Length: 292
Image 1 (cartoon, rainbow, N blue to C red):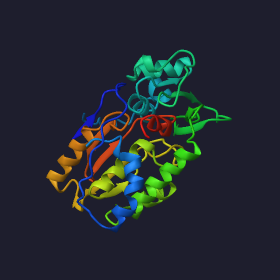
Image 2 (cartoon, one colour):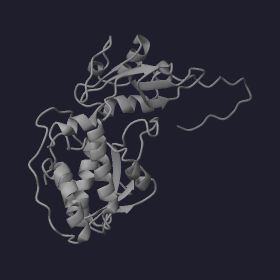
Image 3 (tube, one colour):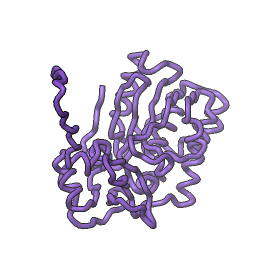
């Protein structure tokens, strides 16, 4: 089951949801101040031909569109931009992307201006002197890789960084938190998109959460930007997706969230529920607009 929200603007926060109190104990008393301030006010609840011995024809070369715009790049541009996001590319590449199904509206013919909530990205074949390389897409043949660059990422302020670190530490300190694979290292670094981290912290405070992984998309550079995708594999100690009722309850709760905390993708997979957000240059600033 996969659900993707339409690109949207609209309200940027939601009413608070009271804690359920399902996991009383010393941690909740000690960590309540951190989680309450950070999340309570903004979250709601054909057959082959035989060889005839004659000369063989060479294999057909990759199509021009596929050579210029690899599938992984097309998928990224089609799915990872929020409303107002753009990608600037050379004319030939722009044409290849539109032929592959990318909306021309997100591919301006000249550079666009972005902000914390609307990325203005650039596709280039040369490493940039500044900015953030989000992803690297290999192309067939001798052409070098294409780099997807955010030339103007919005870095968190010291206060915003401290808020992220406090939330991540509170999630890890909760004895009900279960982490697999790289999830602990990602949380320890606090390198998590503020929108996603707020959701994880809220689930932790409500009833405890298990995290399978923070998966990257094909082509994305590890550590290039805060993690904005996570797979939740348990809730309140009950396994997801094996426990159907718990899985449905989690999906319903995620569906009830409002911007900026409403995920762009909620998908039930074999490992759990994938929760994912589109890329923003400055998610901390966007969350800060609706946080006390």
